[in-house]
Each structure stands twice: as structure tokens, then as C-alpha cells.
Image (spheres, rainbow, N blue to C red):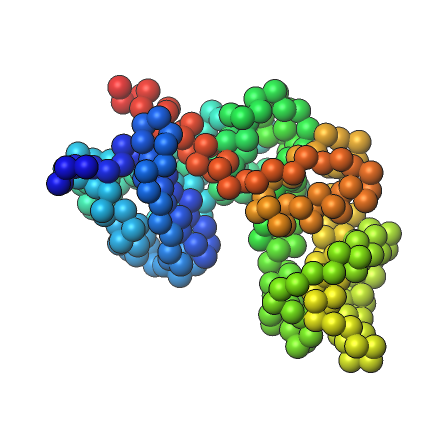
Length: 305
């Protein structure tokens, strides 16, 4: 690379509530470099977004403006600029990124719109780009895509469109309960008991109305019966995922299901579904956001060519 030349043909940005991830991309989709920081949407004021981005991507910029395609909470009401939702049913691969003004002339910013659902009320930001990436890889998919994470999404996809979806606060509940509730004293930071997890999933699926009582029982078993912190972590995970599966049953029962997420978490969902007789395919969701952003970059290139 010569001095002053732009290292990135374009930049992909996944901007969540707590993390910012960026990739310097070649026009053919090759990753040239990547970086990340803890400058998530939740910790930034409106005027802090551009400096946070430039702190990571400045080495990739030159004299020619570089397109930056971003998805996630960066487009929320509390983000860099609020980008309207698109209502279901909609084709995530047809969503058009919205241009947003910047102070630094070395970048041309585009933010992906989120997706909304009126009844029951639901929204997503960032997952629509993951789904678009998934459909690039599997354009003929007709079934349910589960995206486990802080806010897990169950998404019905048909004919290349998001037909409906449902969001669960499972990941955030796990963090809050394990780190801030009375259970925090007996929950390990790592380690896992698969048998305890599977038993808790089955219990929550069969009697989800007992969830609150079963959660406190984790504390009681630790005090009275020596429940290990690793087993307690596994039971908490199983109870919450089991309750989620009980509520999401209409989405996965009798459907083709793909689970796409961080490998360890996606595997837990796959195991829980397998115990219910659902042979879900499990994928690493890591590349999907970049693939979806790449599709969006292609639309920008076509309109500006």
C-alpha cells in the first residue's frame, strides 16, 4: 500500500449496544483488516459516533471518500442517526441502506434500516442484515431461522422474505440474573454441566409457569445441597432457554429450523431442540453480518456507478 492510499475499498460496520466491530473490505469481499472497540451505542452521545468510528478506521482511509455500510443500533433513536424501520413482510436482501451526513469527508456513511412488526409488536436492528447474509448463502430457504444472543430472534422466512418474527430477552436475562441477582453468589463464570442443562430445559418446557420458583431453587440448592457453581450456571441457562422454547413452540414445531449464532450458544440451542425431536442445523453466524453488508454495498455501487 502506498502512502496516503485508501486501504479499504469499503468498510463494513456492525455497531451494537455494547460493541463496535469494523472490517476493511476489498471490492470482492475479501477482508483486508479488522478492528473492534467497546464504543457501543449505549455509551455514546449523538456527537460521539463519528469520532468512535474514525478512531478505528482512520488508518484505512485516503484522499478518496470510502463508503461505510453500517448496521445495528447505530441506526436507532439513540444512535448516530435514526433510520426508519421497514415493516414485515419484507425481503432483507432488498433493504436499501440510507445515506447519512458526516463531518469527515473521507467517509460516505450508509446505515441499514431495521425491521418492524405491528402485531405482536416487535423490532430488530442488525439481525435483518444477518438474515440477508444467510439468504445470500441459502436463497431457497423456507423455514425458521433462530438467531440466539442477547435478544434472541425466531424468524419465519419464506420466498426470500421475513414473514414474521418473535424476540426473547433470554440472553439479557441470563446476564442480569447471573451478575446482579441473589443468584450471582453461586453462579460460575465458566464451566458447564450438560446433564443439568438438559434436565432444566425439559423442566421449563413442561412447566414454564414455574420458572420464577425454579430460578430461586438454584439458590436454595446451592445453600442446602451443595449445588456447584458450574451446575448452577447450567441450570440457569437451561431454565431460561427452556422457557423460551416453550413460548416459541409455534415457530419450531414441525418446521425446518436453522440456528445461527456464536458457536457455543448456538450449540446449546441445537441440543435443546434435538431433545425435542427437532434436528436443527447449527451455523456460526460470524460471517453472516459481513455477507449481508456486502450485499448492501453492492446496491450502493450499482446506484453510484
